Image 1 (cartoon, rainbow, N blue to C red):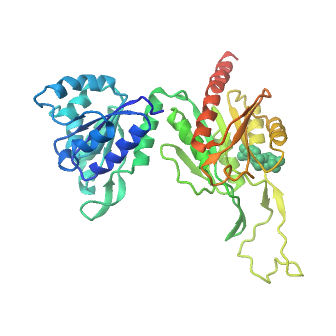
Image 2: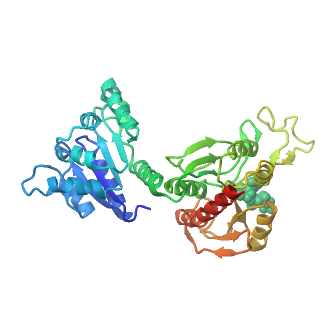
Image 3: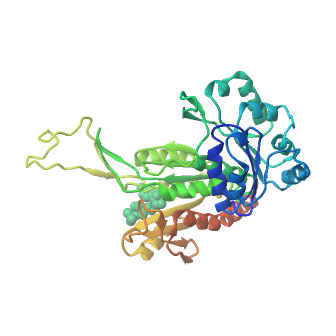
Length: 418
Ligand code: CTP
């Protein structure tokens, strides 16, 4: 989605300026055209050559340089840009932007740009928290800029506080999300993605769980976010980091996952159940840690856990959708199978009333839990089957939303007709 996008990156004079070199490199690797504008003070920290070597494009520094190139380019840069990111944004530049000053190349370009503006402040925490900086940021936010909150941690002064520039993945996520909201094919859609595994308590310290890492669910959530959807992730136990830029609800048990999922469906366009859900829970979890030789044991020293069946969340979602006339809710299930993948998948699709079922054979080493690749087949409600090769989970997520986006449009058009 960054391919061919024109991104202007403004860099101010702060110690975090060096981190932006990595960001520019990642943007270029993803196929974006990146024009870098440095303030005079930024050049004290990083050189224009660093950025031009990475972007393979001229870097703008001085509005008044003798060739007149920069002065002539600022309007063109503004018109071509799909997005302007200012990182790190210092208190001084934030103040200049808030008050519409145009006394250097960056602030002049900022006035010429109509594309979305992202500002990533980074400075000592006293400066960030100063009422003047906060008022300036509010002013910019009121005019439509997105402020990427600085993170807490060790600052250049050695003190600990809020003021650090977020790392490249967070900045990249914000850029993708902002571009998605402007032009994505899921703008105006609300999607719910469940991810990770459920845990069913045995006693206060033990549980029955599974190997789900959350990777596939998070890749689906990130892709939906990047296409402009308002995205809610309901996450159980996961080992992958939480995706930025999406709303997250944490749950533990299947019953909690069921409640959170059903509660989110009223205004959703799609439910994607990538979570690995426990089919059974312990009927009576012990209130205290089960000790060897305790009353819970059978007479022969063995222990019996009685399991009771959990509700089927997708089946309940289908019933809820039918009962409440949620005709526009597209439902997607996942099936992790170890044998007879095709037959089990087709039966599951029908049983759960799904529009799409994504099936994978988790007995294959490069497919399934905890690995970054997946080999899946897509089973559609009309009987079609699409077999995909082994792909990174991010790519699988992209293909799934490629298929779902037109389905969502069709179904909501259908909903309007009715
Ligand atoms: N699922 C669900 N509620 C459950 C169990 C599973 O909504 N109680 C969802 C999963 O999130 C997944 C799909 O149903 O999207 C298929 O999950 P799977 O465990 O493969 O299916 P089961 O219904 O458990 O079928 P089986 O036990 O026959 O494999």
